[in-house]
Length: 518
Image (cartoon, rainbow, N blue to C red; front, side):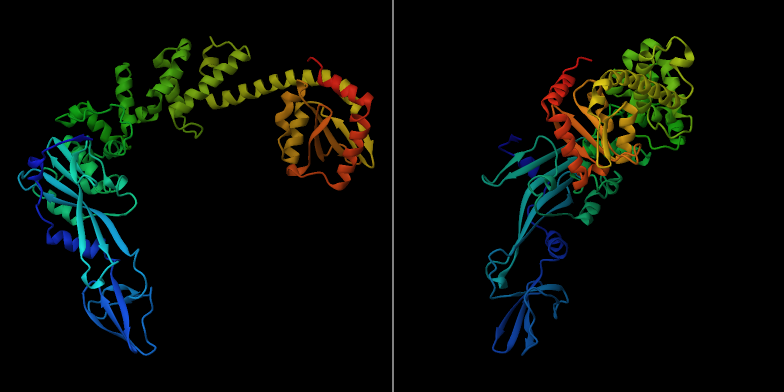
């Protein structure tokens, strides 16, 4: 923030004192829950003092005393109050809040101002003399074409001008209760250029409205965008999201703001869809490329116009012209199926499909291969073929290892153990036992580990337990859903380890197997 020595001209727009309306808003809204009844006993009588109506009266006699902390209704003003025993420590009983209050400018009939007020009610001292204390911590001035904000330096008690408008709700006051005096906004904007700015629709995106009025002051088109059903542009601007340069915020007419002709605006409105910044950006993008898409088509193709996807698309244009690719993507999106909802999904799938086609040696010069009628179905087929091809390569490596691994087959007490025969077996084993051994096929094929199946002798084809051996050590042994071996299975594993892995001869064998070059 930049420091300024003199803001006298700025201050002339603001009221010089706290108005009764501000005080009433604080009492009746901001501190509505900050009403207490302080009770004390004189003999057998209990008296209560209401901090709202400032009256003291008899509240209890004998056993009918009000209790500390209970909610009650003041007998005089009928306010809901919280009972507080006057004798209990009040060293932390301070209620504070922050609210934003709007008024008309005192010197410019076309301008409005807003005050960010920090208010405190301190009950630590004499509760008979409680007053609401007000301190202005932020001041906003909104004039047609410009906005300004001053902030108070708590320590130096000086005012500094902020470089941009922001809400104290999210900064210095984010830890206290915050309010917007809505009725003050209605009164302040009446008869000013902000009266019809549609501010009432943006209290969620701009809770105290300071960012909204900043936007409306700089860009009067905010009103027309909202009324035209294009509030998503205003939402994006308020929330700091990308608007992709889709509109000219300083345009004087809607044609110049949207960079569209009257006929195009009419077409856009009749499209019956929510036109967001990326949709309009997409429409302009394809128009510059010489493609006149409808607004619905531009909406479907929106994601394709961002840098991430345009960079992804560039190397793929060797297979076809930009227009050919766009028309193909539109065809896939308009098929009525639910496999794809954005052009980005289509592009990613087409890229992966082309890579698989190349790996499979398919002829991409043929139109039906390059642009299959149903991309989703074609991609499923190439993915399946790639899996088969890769499995065949893995199985060839596993087949080379099996003759030596078969020597570790072992049977005892109704159980036996044998090596996995191929990647398909590993997949089925993992699926049946619901663990991840199917993902170990590559490691197994390359000799990085040895995988064995434990079966019951009377159920040789039913998955039971899976064992991994690395460097003469059993690193894993799991059954259904990664359950640990039962005592029966553990005894079998111990016998297998002693017989096949711990003997000198066996140890040499397993070491040899781990070092096999495949």
